[in-house]
Image 1 (cartoon, rainbow, N blue to C red):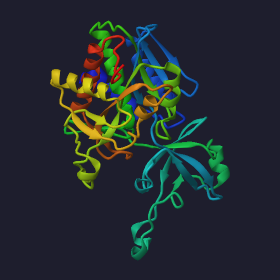
Image 2 (image 1 turned 60 degrees about the horizontal axis):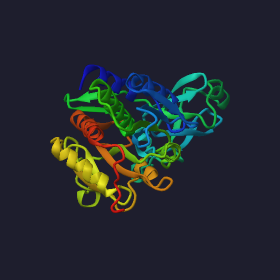
Image 3 (image 1 turned 120 degrees about the vertical axis):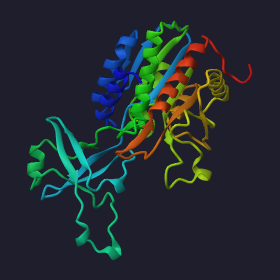
Image 4 (image 1 turned 180 degrees about the horizontal axis):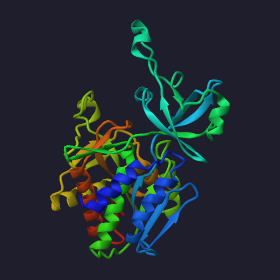
Length: 356
């Protein structure tokens, strides 16, 4: 991976983009993308669309989601302890002893999820972390002091954890789900520009908001753009890591290449073209199955309006929805390459219908 790309990935991952408050991350992403696009749009909730070759009848989307899991302040007690509810799929079990940033109008405030010491807990009935007993300590001694810091009910909090690199092969951090996707589609746009590829269709590079609470950003932007085709990228599980059951959860792993999904929301002819491109360009890939929905923005695009031919290319990831999400650089580069090669080979007006 080139030095400039790796720096952007690190900066982007270390930024905050909680669901409903994605603006700082979106601004950083757009600044990186702008040299490689012709124009851009931002919708009313903050989804950003970079546009290449605008004005064509045939419209193609490559998409990722920008938001990360977080917490909302729900109650502040008289001693200044802050109780929370989830914003997206935040994991209560990993919260004790985590550092957090509370995002106020005055700026970021440091806090911690406190937890009682092991030697004062009753080991015969250990308390389990839950929404009812997790609390954030910001060093205040009263509700009034907390509010003077700019913290109120509804203030959003994110885990505080910067990126790291393992064995020069993996990048680790929070919110790789799915800022890794935003990074990859931006890199596709860069490669198209730098390789001077002239597309015969309009390409939308979409970084959508609010995926973590029900695919809402993709739902809105798909109706706005009305594309003919959508290629969505998200993350999936490395089921070779501990505590997974591959018979139930599939057989995918970091280092094995992009994962392509078969399922009702995935249009089979689009999937077929993706795998043919991968074979032709010798890009390794893995297969997944979705019994009902993919659980990703693919579903929102597929069933939008009169239906959009859609497919899902996923990045295998370890330890999802933790502060140590982990992906392989090799897989990142192969997802980028697969999407890029697909777009280069795609013809304007390609009809993916089964029969006419």
